[in-house]
Image (cartoon, rainbow, N blue to C red; front, side, top):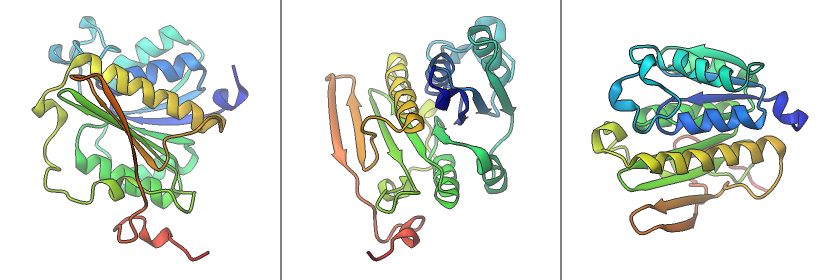
Length: 231
């Protein structure tokens, strides 16, 4: 187990379909400290895609349910739980010693708030999303001058009130996307391989098609444009 992983602290926002595989794989890989954030409770309808939770956990806070499963897998894993909705203040307080943030949330308003906090604090962000048959993953490294941010990708907020649960989702798809998110977190923590920074990886499960799109920093981005400096 690499020492960098053992001494790393990763914040996971959302313990649903994406957060479940992300947290399980990061714990099993040897990340030493996971900070789990989710204000929801386990419901029967969650179990077909949120594989970290069990029938016996229905009604429990998702952070509690996840901790039970994770520490059964890795007893020495350090876990911090936050059973609350995120605010700008709470996010900034959390990021003071976080190495990587993993966005596993299911709505634009939360994603925008997480992105803004990561940009402000210079914290790496691994973002994932999945809905119906399609999913995507991107990595944002705000400490790097030319890295775009999530808002460079989605500057139009027309659909920000729609959630994945409202639109439906194919259960195995979140496992695929969450696994890639976990992989990207490990690469960022270890400083190895080629990350998805500056790229958007998309997957269409219906046609079994992967695409990698270039993602550039938007000079008019309302969040990160102030980070652009002249050479």
